[in-house]
Image (cartoon, rainbow, N blue to C red):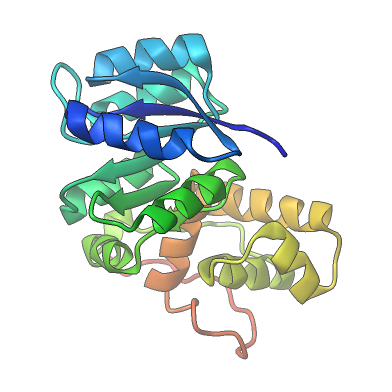
Length: 227
């Protein structure tokens, strides 16, 4: 069993202590650091190189949103899962745009939090449906929509739709009857062509473009946003 190394960053000590206690009881998780503000989170991440950074947004000295690019710089392989009390659409969108792979509210159930950490640890996006809708509504301005001059291939479009349905690379491979390494290549190509940072952004893009529920439709090239 691979141990998931987690950094918990939250300025509320009661919340932080509670999360640390929950994670410490899991056989596949180990808390490798704690932080009470954004600056401390960056320093601890630089030293501990965690697999997952559980990050609060509203913290002193440096907010979680401000810390994300610094965290990506000092620990590029760490996956960031935002856990916060509020889900302002702009903040959620900016967090994901900055590189967060997941976004949860603090009132989420314990089992949902643990599953989200496990999903994010292996590179799968984890975002609550209600929060996803907030982000979709935030992506309203044409200038912020993604567009690629190089069209997606039929297989890449199919991969994008399956990402939007929350499938892992293994599940996508089984659905498309190809090797997981082939799917990994498709995913990388989709992200590169659409200028997206991660699977979460790809899923939100697909939902915004009406592709998420198009399982039986023929693949099509993403349309240029209207000016």
